[in-house]
Length: 238
Image (cartoon, rainbow, N blue to C red; front, side, top):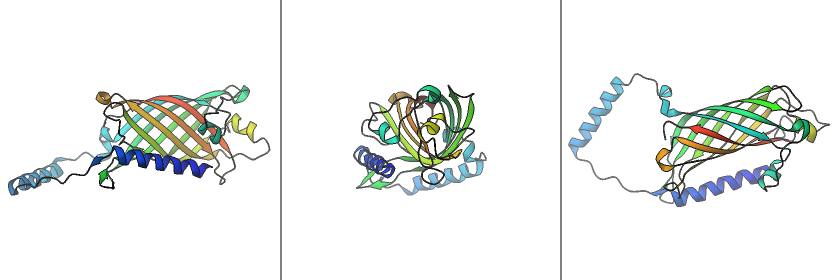
């Protein structure tokens, strides 16, 4: 079932990206003088730019929010039958994220171009369960952020998903209750799914709705936990 959701997300993003992408247009021919000036400016820029690219603030984004731990499987979340955890499994995860834009892709499909950012998020979480003292959770991975959607001129929208790893100081109570007779690993697969929206004139200030899925993936163990939440994201480069 997990693979079906991955395929559905990919196909949905592909379709909306194709219809929302800008048609490719051939650039106008440049004169010899213009080409010469551009070459000179490029050489000058290369000579004077001593700041490493990774230090440019426009390559970074910052996010803070809260997620609510559910007592539901990924299937139940996907079919809108999710419920919050109860008893000791009830709680929140306070999340702080820093993400680095490693690459900006502009692939072409069916004569249209669309924008996809490759990002490397690092996520620090403070887990506050009712049955535990607060403990730490660390996540990191690689994500693709799809930025070309047909309604962006009215509501700027990004869709992000990817894969990574999560390490928790303690196993979540929601996992222990659902799988009481199974060994649980502190290391799990991390699958974030995030929807970002913003006013078109203030794209750098984004409201985020997210699902963070943590599971063994059949590698570390079977089963996992899901967190639904909301966050604020600041993207200086938008």
